[in-house]
Length: 284
Image 1: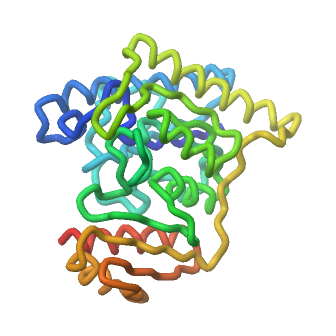
Image 2: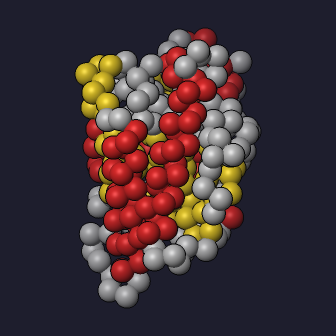
């Protein structure tokens, strides 16, 4: 089995505010250790669930500039995709054709979700909403759909209770590891690291064990690769009209109103890269 571990930071153990996840923040370096511990817990659980049969673990650091996971503390069975800009960002490596499954660690809910820590979709500064084929979507759905385009199912996610519920709506049967319960955007009841490690490890172990067992006896409840219908339509609503002015320069984009653009792509990987290009234009 070959496993992709996609990593964000807002859903990591103990994170409740931007100071914890912004490289300029005074608390950021402390939370890099906690994030790396979450990643290691997921890897340890996956190894246990697979009975030692995992051939490859690829960790893709998808938060900020891709320099958050501490490689010196990372489980040595894993390789790390770090830095920016990479073609598939948070799920970089899935396109290489040698991943059997994915796990999402440290994820957060989509923009506008109530009682969700640091809810946003890609850019908290400029993106107000995103729709995928007419359905409101966050980073969980976008990244899972990219994985699905390459035939890779997402087996498990860790983060706050809100993103775990969001993931269940997109990926029936997904295992979840809840490490905190938000009372607002920057307040939550958090489990300590001594407990979150066990929660994440257990969820990853269950997820991978179910996949391994299904190879002998297929299970209908097992998460399947999330595939979206083509052509893929993306709608992006920006915070301000000036951002949409810039994003509308994307070839093929259509201006819907002052803050909203839309475009169609032949497949999900192309849609994902076009979406990222539109957001990049908007933030210039």
